[in-house]
Amino acid sequence: MFSIQHLIWLAICILVIFVSLHAMLQRRPPLRQVLSAACVLCALSEFIKVFSYIQMVPSADGSAMHMFMEWRHLPFHLCSIQILMIFYVRFAESERRRETLLAFMYPTCIIGASLALLLPSIFTNGIEPSQAFTHPIGYQFFVYHTMLVVLGVYIARSGEVDIRFSHLYSTLAILFALGLASIYLNSAFAYVTYQGTTLLSVENTPNFFFTFRTPIGIPLAEMWQWYAYIAIISALAVGLITLFYLPYRARGSAKAPK
Figure 1: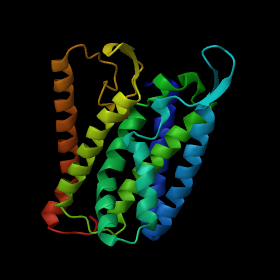
Figure 2: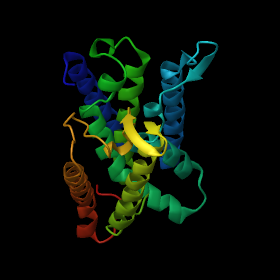
Figure 3: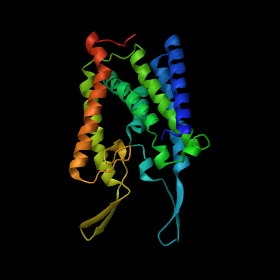
Figure 4: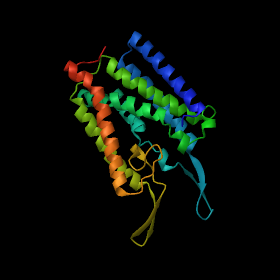
């Protein structure tokens, strides 16, 4: 984190974001066309991720080999879930649901992807910083999250989505529902040891939505610390997302702040 390779990638991503948005706001391509391009990038991103992380692992007795991708790489983080939403809003016919999801994607793509670029998990659960420009995952991670930032901004600036302040409530409801689901998923995919029906230990739990562990390595050893951590990230989520909708409260209802 914040290695020289990370800082170079950050500079590249910021430049790409500004150049891409400048060109898009000049030409004003239809949002569906932008979403089509995003679908292609999403598919390519997942293709690279799967074939970079999948591995052949022996069985316990060594008699067979099995293909396996570690659970932490499954697409259950907020930024990964955006892939399903991008495909849905591109091809959905229900305008009401599509508008709700686009309004959700507007702040969450920008905030989630920006935090991912600042705190890249690939350097702790994927590759070494020295591999940032030599491993496909480095390109997959930074290009994909850069695309999400551009898409989130363009959803608001395209003039095609009727974003309203009331979308704040549906966005928070969706986000907290996904956060609750992540607790179930983190537990379901954990490596656990039982003696009879007694739980002895838990190893290598995934951390979807960062609901089990902090993204910066601060240990949580007591339940009260976890409750405090959840309260802090919940308050940050509410505060940051509210800031994104405040311009629409001032306008009452606006399709895009110019």
